[in-house]
Every structure is written in C-alpha cells, then in structure tokens.
Length: 469
Image (tube, rainbow, N blue to C red; front, side, top):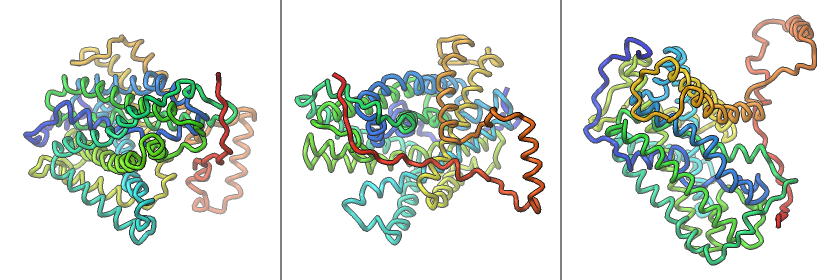
C-alpha cells in the first residue's frame, strides 16, 4: 500500500543507461565520505591518536552499520527515486513523508552549499585571489553552474566521474600508507591526554564523517537491478569508507615523530604527506582534497534532484518536477537544487552546519521509526534483502544511533529541555507575567533562543601530549 493513490501514477521514463554497482559504490562513497579530509579534527579533539582510532572501530558498528543495513533493506524493497520519503510515507502516511522530504532536501541543499567554498579554501594558499569577495563569489557561482550542467548531462556520467574522482582522491593515501611503513611505531597509536579531550568536538567529527548512508536511496529508480545491486553497493561502500579513514590515520599518527595533537586540523594530512613523502605528496593530497569536494557536490546534487523527481512521481510535488531532459535527468529539480545552493552560499559556514545537522537528525530519527513500523505493519512486504533479525532485533539495531542523535541534539542545544528543579506552576506564572509585559503580539520574537543554538568552537589550548606506555 503506497502513501497515496498518486503512488500508482506511471513514472516518467527513465534513461536507457542505468547505474551499475561500481558507480553506485562511488556515489555512496561521496555521499558519506569522499576521503579522510576533515577527519584530522578528531585527533585534535581526541587529544591524541587513541580515541580517533578506537572511534573508527566502534562508530561504524554503532552508527554506520545500522544506517547501511536499513538502507540496503528498504532501498531494495521499495526501489523508488522517492527513497526515504516513500519509506516514511508507507509507514506513517503522506503527511509525515512530505516532512521527511522537506527536511532531507533542505539539509542536502545546505550541505551542497559548502563544497564549492571548501574547494576554494584548499586552493587559497596557492591562489590568494580566491580569498577576496571579488574573486570568490563569482567563482563559486561558475563552479556551481559547471557542476550543475554535469548533473544535467546524465547520471551515468556523474557515476563515471565519481569512480574517477574516487580513484584520484584515494590514491595519494595509498602512497602515504606505503611510504609510512618503515617509520611506523605502534606505540604512537596509544597517545592520549585525557585532560585535554574535547568530547563534543570528538563526537561531532566521528558522526559527521560517517553519516548520509541513506542519501543514495533516492537513486534506486535509476539503478540496474536494485534488489541485487543496492545491498552490494552499500556494503562495498562501507568497506571503502572505513578503509579510507582508518589506514591513512594509522599511517599519519604512527609515522609522525613528535606528533602534537593540537596541530591536527582541516588540511593537516597535507602536512603529514610533506613529512613522509615530500612536497610532491603534499601537493597531491591538496589536489585530491579539492577535487573530492567536487565529487561530494555531484553526489549530493544527484540525490537531491532525483528525490524531488521521486516525490513528484508519488504525487507529493507538481508533475513538472518529474519531467526529464533528453539525457534522462530531472531538469526542473536540478535547477531548483542549484538555486538553493546559490542562495545558501551567502550563509555563514557555521549557520549552515547547525541547520543541516538538525534537519538531518530529525530525518534519520523518522527513518529509524519507519524501518521498525514497516517490519510490524508490512511483514508481507517483498524484501529482496532483509536484515537478518526479527522485530525486536530491528528495534535493537536502531537504539544506538537514535540515542547518539538525541544526545548530540541535546548537547548542541538544537532542542531545549525544561529544568525540572522548579515547580510546574512557576512556569505558568512566568508565562503570564511575560505576556502582561508585551505590548502587542508583533513584539514577540518567533525565535527568542536563536542565538543559543549557535555552536561556538572551543578555544584552542596549548599543545600537550601524554603517552600511555
């Protein structure tokens, strides 16, 4: 039973060229990771190598694996471009499905607004022209237009590009790992200074680098034999993502003599390359980092635009969103996604991060609930791939990631909790007094606590390293 009668509408024609398993692995890789760029902050926040390395062994099991398993089951069971929108609609009805679609599309558009900016940030040390507004904003718009055109030209082209970019992004780290072998000292992996651990930054880095496994579900309608290809691609990408994080981090932290955790930050792997391989490896890593952002942009825009097409096909959006170009791509949906990126590029980096994380967390909690509800409500649903657990097992695998999301939302003050130390009656009295002092309704702020949700980066502390022997 679909979310609405419109679910039975004949979908718009798909392109003759379908995505196969290898390009799908590459697109999922870029939906989630794109390489170890950005992982460096986990070393600084973890005050050494030990916690990040333990995190890359633990978090994929508690966080990434449940997301990947749910995506593999539901994307193969309901292979539609509506993806997670259809999952939620089937479980809770079209109203909640539309909320899911709005949250996830907005989150994705915000996420995509970051990548042209980050691309220029990697080039800025060598090309200062991109630091100023005169050169920066026009370049962002040109990049967005060029990458949008690539999406328009066909999903199979995006898939092939993702494979090429994956090879280019991962290859310098293969060289880094090989060159580091003679210099590895395993005791360096045990370094930690518990007094300087920034747990908030550590958890944020771990979760941020291991999420968005569900994004590729909006491409399920464009995949050749999705019932077989999707589970293979999801688990192949899981191995690739974890390996692309763990091996470079083992190499970098194990081979760097006198490593100072406080020096690790965005872009530090280039300095690791300089120390281990020389200037050529540093430049290679910097180029791979810049190009990785292009792969991230392409994968995100593909998912966002085909999500709008899928929502149109099940009657949640006007029919023109499902119109395809001669290349089989959703023209109007791509243009809307590109417009969203342009407008959101004016927001600050921190504002974008805060909002997209909040919307992403809401959407994921709803997906976990839909996964459980469909196991209960639709036990007869054809599941080409089924997570090998019963209903209680399905609930159990959703608990750890759901708790992590709720904990993160609370710690970042994305949601506020009432202090129970005061009697309930006092809140009624306070509210009454507050309204007595307001001259008219227009003077009430719709977001009185907006400033409290903004995340402030912790002050940088002096470098200090303690080795556990």
